Length: 113
Image (cartoon, rainbow, N blue to C red; front, top):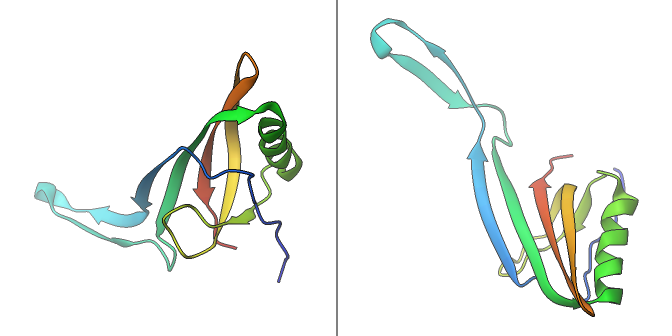
């Protein structure tokens, strides 16, 4: 079993927006009738939009460096308000600098490996 890095940011995120998607497979028949079912064991997948506001430059650089180093390789993280660590992948994030502070926004997608 592969070993994955654990994401441990210096601060908890300011906001976490979660969306969920169920992957389905199905067949359409005539007259609008269709049959669908969940596609596999891990058909329910979480997607998080995570934001850290008012970070120091060092905190910002640390989060940015972690995502850069992963290069889309999955990592472990336990989101706030949850007790279960899951495997995530980050392929999109942005950094905004305002004077001596900054913010980071990232999209994390749940991974099953």
